[in-house]
Image 1 (cartoon, protein in one colour):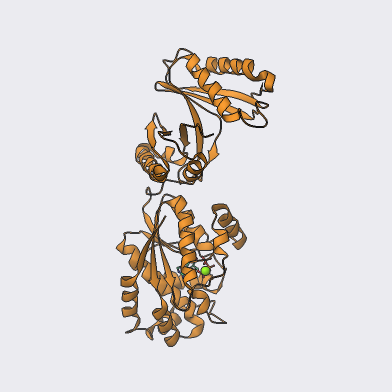
Image 2 (cartoon, protein in one colour):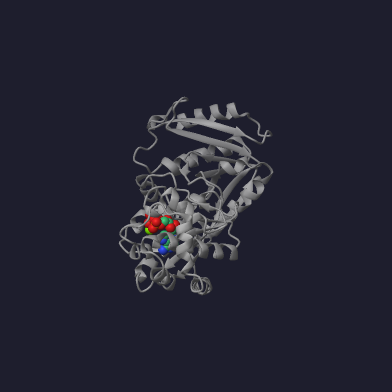
Length: 400
Ligand code: ATP
Ligand code: MG
């Protein structure tokens, strides 16, 4: 399929945005351009309510298709053959070329059923869409019937789509699925708490899929956590960035804060208090970068810090909205999701993150706000400075 010079981009939801439609389409075009830039010369443009990608140089088909079909907002990508003239012959020849290019070299050859479906947007074309359907169908049969091609108007194996738009005809028959969602940049920005586990990369993906630009923060506790744990988080963020576009990652040094909590607070409350401080730091970074929410991979009941009571107490540490897209999912469902998006294999690498090292054997599962606030009184006068320092010294990495 290396001869494909043109693709049609199918998008669903952004088509429903009324007057904002152009804004959405423009952002999607920009995302596609950015992703294709390193792969060759391409023209990405809108034409009559469609987005097209035209290859102007040689490129690696599998690489380009693999990258484009990960962009949020795209429902499908169709390799297209173009008819340059507004004549029946030009359109028919494009259909022949398309057939040769798409099925010519394949094992099953032309042994399949088909149906032609024409949309004639340019009404100046001399035939109507039904006439085009019938003529193309007839000519295809004449050419390929002896090689097995046959018509099935109800359940065809292949739907040959012909579109007459502007001054050109476009022919396609194959839809390579994309992730759907909305183009990133159409719905603000959020700060994701990204750990090396299974859940938070999925949560980051899910919010990104709604068109939200994602930033991330990772709490690192050297020397208690390995350098490899940080590398794992970077790798996970990089995988997610293939869908969301570049992710700005803050690496926060959390060691002193954890030790301070450990030395001053009841050990069965460590995880809760630690989470509250993680949230406060995330909120500070979010404000700095104009992110409108923080995102986590928490799911009700998964561990002690994710009971309804714990989540409530953790939420109360910040003012900004907290989004937890996997809140109602079972672990197995999150695992399947992570397999689908390609983060699972990395998530199960064995490096521990900071939470697993400072956990108590019997953490509280039903913390009371009053209790926690009382314990946090022991941190007053020490923790503020440490939080400031953690925010100020956070290291920034751009994952892409
Ligand atoms: P995950 O699979 O995402 O690691 P988890 O099941 O291990 O989650 P917890 O350890 O309770 O659950 O963490 C809950 C959420 O808190 C994570 O999904 C993540 O959003 C955030 N989080 C936990 N540890 C860190 C960390 N070291 N850095 C950044 N965020 C973290
Ligand atoms: Mg974890």
